Image 1 (cartoon, helix red, strand yellow):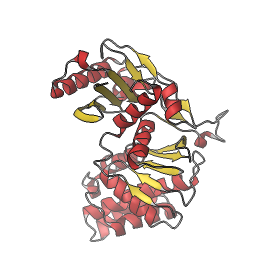
Image 2 (cartoon, rainbow, N blue to C red):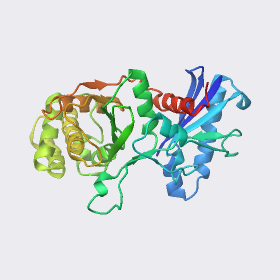
Image 3 (spheres, rainbow, N blue to C red):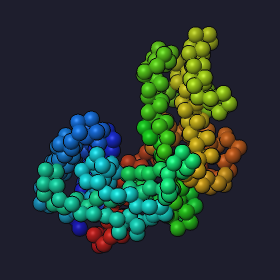
Image 4 (cartoon, one colour):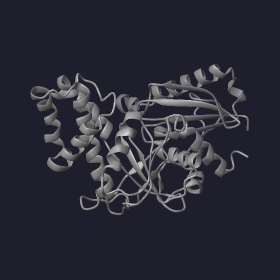
Length: 333
């Protein structure tokens, strides 16, 4: 199996990686995702975008289409606004469950050869209503990233994987390295909207924190957990109007507030089972990783080791995980 293409489609971006004998030889990303399908009502733009990204990747490696041996797709590509809707695998789910759930499809407008789609994972909650909807959650894409992290670091659970981003994911792993549940927050989207589309835009100069200020980060988190996120956010304006704190300080205060609210989720959500001593692994956007690590280490609730996955190690986690799932399916020798 010489050449493997992995396609990782998200809400706003698609990433395509070409692998040869487990080594990345080309990688391209394109700003097209399932958001485009949701807006337009059809998948034509997504199909063209994925196709173009594949061709750019192959050109970068000087590889022809017929030289590709296997194509793997993960992420939102399997959602109802993706290229092929594939039901989530119910938790607990690990390598074998994901492998069994794979489906091969042919989409000529995207690629001539079949694409093996990897399913997402969902929590198991029956008769969902107001009384138990908080226990429900699901993921598409993070499951292969989790598989990649486990393999890269040689993890044996139980463990908690934290993946901050536009939608932050907290993924619970058991002693068999199966995903037993997840919980999602809108941390990144909240941060973006508050920074750009509220009265705080001027106080923050429509910009995020550029470096960590531990004092301001911790103060923002404590404030959000004490008086609520709404009031804490407004305090950013007060800090601007009446104190000498600079823009990056105020941005840290807001970052701490939003991520501090996430820690309440981690402690109290019924969607996952977080024990205080559980080891924690954090991967995602650089400043968010470091900020969460600092907040967790300064929170008396948490007593387990905290590991921040390096940028280099997490560069191609989705592809690495997809290849491991394909190997478990028997598609790769």
